[in-house]
Length: 138
View (cartoon, rainbow, N blue to C red):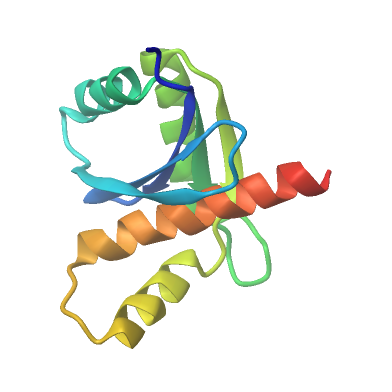
């Protein structure tokens, strides 16, 4: 039986990349993993695409507090260009305003230990949920 196609969302940081996943047609996103952002990133992402039958990426696009572009915005845009070139799937940017802050607050409220990678994966989940919500509402 063929696995239904999925969407992968990425919260790209200098050291780590949080990854979330949702099945196409469903509105439920959940954290998948956290990857080290190193020289093996394209190999790691290729394996995730293959293992999860993924057909596209949603990548968090950071902006300044007033919505302006920042150095981090440009860094994410470069990463998206490299993602398209290295993996060959469609890549959609998604505003990621305060997703990491929201993720850390949620994890703190649970009262259980967590690591930085947990914040990144949950932030990617919020990015993907925002993207899915915008698609449903348009």
